[in-house]
Image 1 (tube, rainbow, N blue to C red):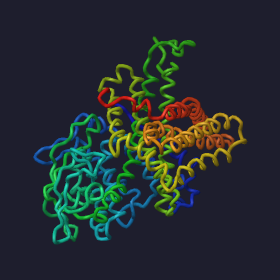
Image 2: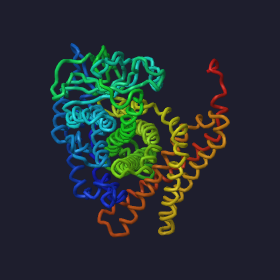
Image 3: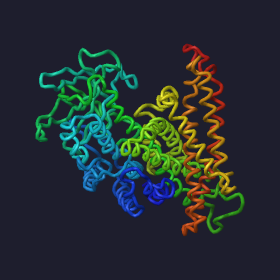
Image 4: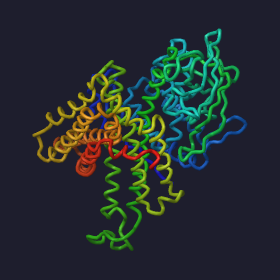
Length: 593
């Protein structure tokens, strides 16, 4: 059975050596001393390793089942969910007013990675609830918050988001689900939604669905979409549950992966719903949830890559196969372990350097969310908005690739289910699709986010990179050569791509959109390059200051040097592709494909 060990030490290094969170002026960060965060991460790690990870293959093999209108989760899920709830993990970074612990999002993200890596399908139940609660917190009335949030924060009640319909996915203006106003101020919701993660299950007393629908008589298209709170079971003004609402499960989708999560077809038959936010402004309210979910999905790419890497590393050390070309390393055995071979080392280094760089990227992004929410920092809000499609698109594309590389280390055994490696690959694959397919993320980045606020935020990113390089150059020649020079070159590639879009995208938008995927990946590489430059700086300083754990910091530097030398130069390839424009991409008529 695959194993998982929470990366508590590496996370602590990022939080305190790199991001220096306890020194930050963001409200609440002064409480995040190393001893405190270590205690939180250690407890979360134990839960992930001892409780959630053993259930991961159970969820994969058993899946969920629908019997007489009730969805049953895999063996052990319900008991594990009770442990998660009892530990207060579901409300870790939610307001105390509603039963949460009010910790910063950066801690929620660190814990979320551990839970997702150990059991992605299970963790989605509380993850979707967190997103739905965040939408109610941002857009609900005080009465709605008081009614729904306390039991959602505790996960006594869970939540979902309902967007997609059989005939429309990204183009939500085509939706047919309708909302009919009632005399008491409620609405009757009728329609069908598909692909609803955590749509129904036996682990909570109630499920609070957030449903996009069009109010009868409203504007056409996306301008007529509103968001509604539609509970599975009706709740009165005292918070007591009553009759079953007109919500039912049509079926559970049969999926490639995340079998332990109940992805449902949901039928709404004049179900009672309550408007969340303003009429016809549903997308604004839903995007509160979707943006949070996109950052969480980016984390899933990292999480599955790291879990797969851990197991591939173990296998490479245990599996004897062939001899080291430079001389036997296991002369008393019939062969040397796989890890002696350069191509295996290359694969493992690609996985390791991605996972550690992506972890820093995710946690840095979480500090921006905290700055935006806790300090009302508009610049941080703008920057994380710019980076959201990069976090979601790049980390899930590459995260999936890394699970494939990990599977490949096993050779034929990687293709055999009993070894468990295919689950990481299958579970990681959905992250490239849901919460906005990665092609849409790339279009959002190039088509909307680059020009947002007059290009202010992308220019701020370039200035951030430039300032970091300037402030840290000339102190250590080896560090400059290994980290700063590659980062400078990659940043110049990214700026050149942006300039190409400006010069050629206006006269032919396809010139920009044809290069959007390359630009998203280029941007992702530059972000990980920046993270590695910061980690390299922290490791260099720790060694210079006489840190006792020299092996940890030397390993960090070696891993960073690999990424900067072997992965970051991919920006040049992406730039070359972008510079070819749309001609070759759009050359064929549709009939000639």
